[in-house]
Image 1: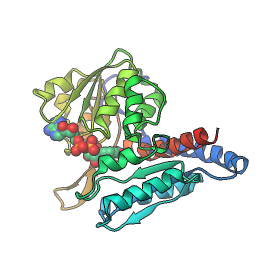
Image 2 (image 1 turned 120 degrees about the horizontal axis):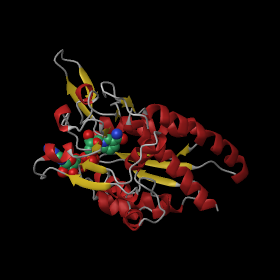
Image 3 (image 1 turned 45 degrees about the horizontal axis):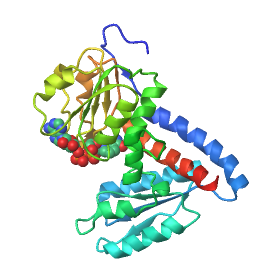
Image 4 (image 1 turned 60 degrees about the horizontal axis):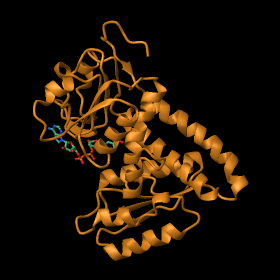
Length: 295
Ligand code: NAD
């Protein structure tokens, strides 16, 4: 990648544009495959309760499915649904030949055991890559369905030809959804990976050593310009809603974008960076399991 000399304007890693490109390719592929195979790929998104943020995410996923020709088998359940009933639904979807992917929109209400539910999903339909079998495959470096957000980050690195081998990468945040699988994926790309978290000491000093910084914390503008090495690559996974000084609500990431963009060589915006890539990877995973199921 060509790097700016003074980094006063970091290259924007445009996740929205890349997601659109991937979705166009998927649409073309699915349009060819559907008549040949007698059915389109199918995705079931399960949502429980009325969390407004979850409702937006689910709607975006279903809209993206319909754009590329994936059939949606989404189900929306009341807040008080029982564990047993949800497990029964997952069993049915596991057996349903029209369904290639099953995703449980998290978080779930506290009376439900989300880990037990995730473990019920057939690993070959686990398009969120959260089943222990798929996480195990990731640890072992075997093929398998990969978690969508980390896979989206890796796809951005590939698109912009950002070399990771030998680079010092730091992942801030150690969730099973983002931080942990992403650290393993960066390791698989031969980066030297540091994982930082809420108990890390001297976070600023750790970040300052990194050539590649990924923030997946959920704390608005945690990463400040003075923590970033000049010329670093900065990926902002965080999504935080804040009210600005004028009383307006807006989304910001875990990185103080304006200042960090003056120091970094490349940076993802929020919104329009990692978020759209997560959806694109979900669609891609659904196609992967459709192709596997039919072969
Ligand atoms: P999480 O709450 O499960 O994990 C947060 C992690 O941050 C924890 O591992 C914790 O140890 C670490 N952490 C907390 N405070 C810290 C601090 N002060 N310093 C260093 N580390 C600290 O969150 P998550 O599900 O991994 O999500 C993280 C962020 O990414 C959230 O803002 C979420 O909305 C966003 N997210 C975005 C996408 C996307 O598609 N763009 C997808 C998933 C999550």
